[in-house]
View 1 (cartoon, rainbow, N blue to C red):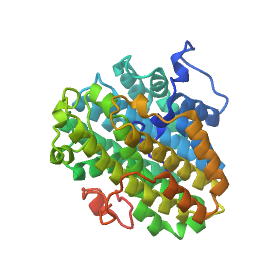
View 2 (cartoon, helix red, strand yellow; view 1 turned 60 degrees about the horizontal axis):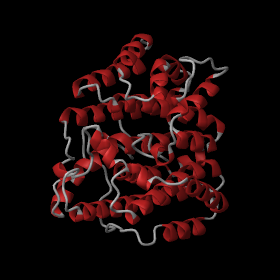
View 3 (cartoon, rainbow, N blue to C red; view 1 turned 30 degrees about the vertical axis):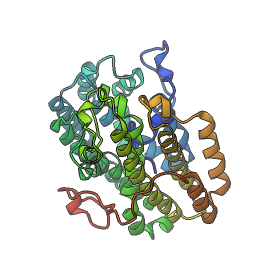
Length: 389
């Protein structure tokens, strides 16, 4: 169950230059909403365009829409021309547009005009089509809409808080990183779990056990992408690494691009790899709670885990990396992940063995680490892993 934050949970693990970067008509006609969502996914995320269609058809449609909703918030956060206050403003406007029967046209036009050329053409196209994305959202059953709204609401408000903090040289502590990962990835894990339970009575019987692992699953994927994209994020004025972890290793994150002695930085990265590894172990446990006959949902989850493990292995092997492209997984690695998981998707024993072999040699954080999300106004209201209000 990948997170939908695309630096940021799995989309950038294997993203080629956008198909939208070539000359094309500024607007396109789609025969159906499904065609529209499929085309949007191919433009903004090659990975999710690959994994989401593995889901059962009804789930595929709602999860595709959920991804696009989250990507709209993501596009706002990543726009370098917007101040933290403006980003919070647009997030609030988007939530108002999503949650009430308000025309999305004015929001779409206003945000599109505020985006710079540093935002991809595919994301510009997505923002121009916000009204259609929301129109599809409103076509779903009420329980599905509520799951999507809760996720997007929590994500937008949480990300807005972090934008206003303006911590360009890293977050303060590991707990702050946990909280950030919760807002951008853990809430997605909770949303997907709700959708899976609505889809299958058998999965619903395991709701509580799945919810206990959903946040950790999202954090494992999110931390992998934070590590992979640290240099690109820093160039655009963002850093999601915890300063205290690196200070304990003798490295000052404010000197990330200028320090000559990088051993402390590399030790800090390996500590975070160990934490991400432990989260991904929880992600495997989550996946094995999905009934064996639900092969589409299992593949959706397992492919994301496989992509993340491959990325952590590359980072650990090329610890002197200074660009995300140096630790980007290959097409061959993607194909291996897909093939091996398809062959073992219904065999829990083989899946556990496959994860053990794949992560051999990676640092691993102590199992005593508490994986619960940092207490916030939202998480304090959680009941059985669900956010209220």
